[in-house]
Amino acid sequence: MIFYIIKNPIVLISLIVVLIFKLFPPKSINSWYGYRTTRSMKNDINWKIAQKYSANLSILILGIVLIIQCILYILYQSSALTDLTTVGLWFVGMIILIIAVETKLKRIDK
Image (cartoon, rainbow, N blue to C red):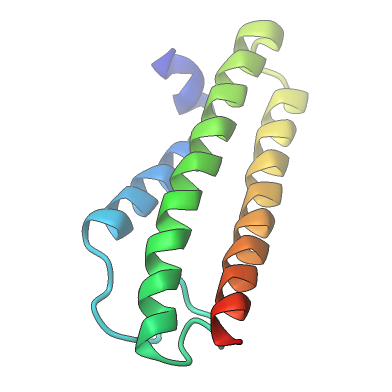
């Protein structure tokens, strides 16, 4: 199973980075570390919520993409389609993450 993950490590690397963010979340608003958008950096409450929610949702999304990646490698072996699908799912997952976090922050600001 690890062999399939290592073939296209983008999801695994992303998951490791997110786990580090979860274990060591940024304590204060900064411009280089954590989930950073205009809305998340608006105040400390938004910042803390965005960091926690984005880390948890990222782990879920990346976990699902990692499982799909392994299934695709088992079914289709190493192919451009498998790699493109994995990267595409990763990209779509990150878009979903941004939309979900920003929606949650928008609800809090009201």
